[in-house]
Length: 156
View 1: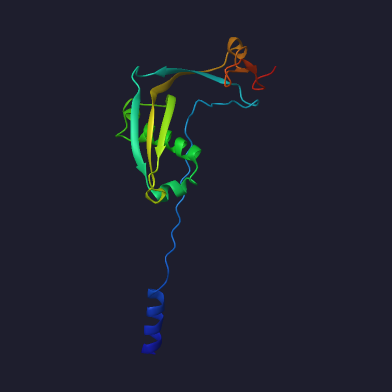
View 2 (view 1 turned 120 degrees about the horizontal axis):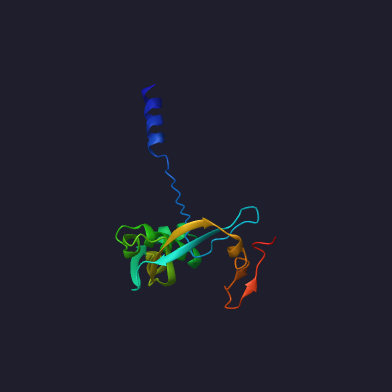
């Protein structure tokens, strides 16, 4: 009986531990969209500093893997981290969004992770309001391509 108990203890002692890591982040990148079922909102965006701010940090290879190694995911996470990390000048400015954000992502050795730098202007949203009839005239237009284009956001 002691041998059987000893065998069970030894077997349990060699059990393998498996860990999984996953990170998903959504950042505000000036892409607020309203559904046709919701009356649109308007908001003012106030840039809180006329000086560009910069924040750099390191992501381990494990963290990069958790972001699927995709540059778009790393950029979104960088904006999130810049606006929430207390050491970041963006966070210290109470940042809701990074205006004119630029990113530098370098990886001298992919096994060591990546170094990320975010540069831009911190801004906050203020004066949220339900869109008025006057606002509804310009909401259907977007300037994402540099040209004024009509979108299907709002149609009466």
